[in-house]
Image 1 (tube, helix red, strand yellow):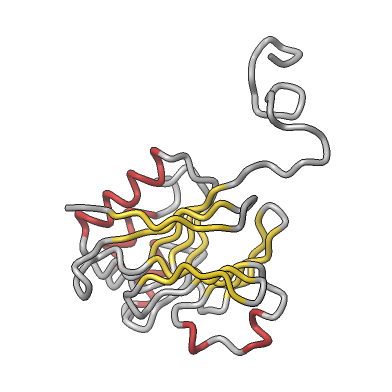
Image 2 (cartoon, one colour; image 1 turned 180 degrees about the vertical axis):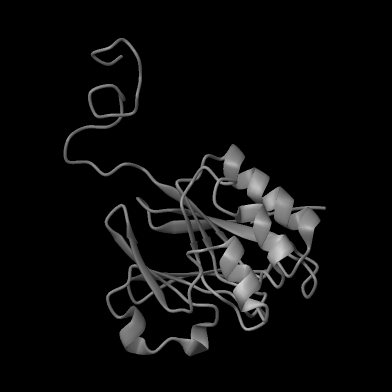
Length: 185
């Protein structure tokens, strides 16, 4: 218990946090939702239930009505999002997701450098030279691989249109590892 008799999450109150340690952060990663609202809704509900500390969407929302599922105020965690190659209604998407940008997007969370882009082939080696984690989408196929001191993550497709698997990823930033999770209909 903390000074005030409650567990607020600070190093004084939280039993497993100590000064000099990093907070265990988990991030939800999603890609290629392609307007398939049932699986997109389940993925968002999963991230909320797991209390992820951030959500990364690597593009291909398709329409603004789908993007509303992760619009500001819906998620309790910060959202980092980039355009995909099928996101044609860019102005409408930008109105729903004001922080939506073209990749690559470089972010730092819990001391880990993360680079995101929709397609791995669009990244130049210099884009991810200093990254700890490289997050992409586009191929609709899962990638969860440690290589050359970096974690490469493609959560696969949330929509399930191509592979018949609706998947997202949960990344543990302390361990620098990812788990692929099925999001069933």
